[in-house]
Length: 179
Image 1: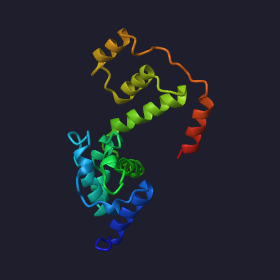
Image 2 (image 1 turned 30 degrees about the horizontal axis):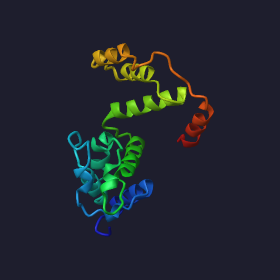
Image 3 (image 1 turned 45 degrees about the horizontal axis):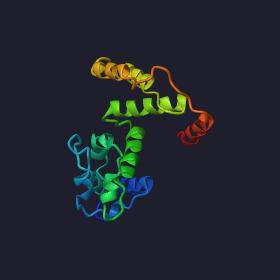
Image 4 (image 1 turned 135 degrees about the vertical axis):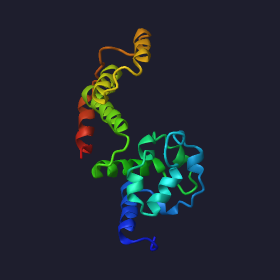
């Protein structure tokens, strides 16, 4: 990577180290993109994100929707002939975007944090309280209310949470992984 300046090389090295992935091995075969379920919603394909990282394009990458749209299904990693798990790279880039204050898809981060709060509180996700909290925080109160009511009527959305017995172990996991 000697053809890029020191700042761009620093970004590349930081992503490679943080993700633990051999991103220098990507030769743009596009197998990751051909299996990606999110490409219809993202501004860059997975291989394009890797290429932008290789070129040290920090602002473009951290300000992209793609890193937030990635569902971490790991199809990209399963298809990569060089064993690059692009989902790990996307996770590292999300952390870097949060640290830089450049979160483009704020509702994705809000949903993620609300989900984790539910798991932290109950030891597992409680969909009704998680979605209620997400709806309040996002300000999008009514967009899919009919869907939620249908789930409630069918018994697919329990009103009361069920706590797991080993909540202490879940608490320990959260404590060990807190930043």
